[in-house]
Image (cartoon, rainbow, N blue to C red; front, side):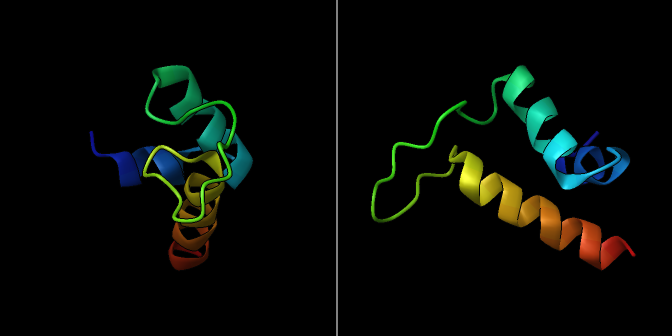
Amino acid sequence: MGKKSALVKAATPADAVKKLMKAGKVKKKCCKSKSRCKKCPVLALKKAKAAFAGAA
């Protein structure tokens, strides 16, 4: 099961990010670095919103 399919299966983008946090793929808190790291919850939420918009 890929990450993208896991994002689309959740009810909302926030739920998808919560699942990724629980799995350890995303950090719980953003470190606010200028170039966001790949485990950033802010980027994960942005990607989840894009995935939900693409699926609809």
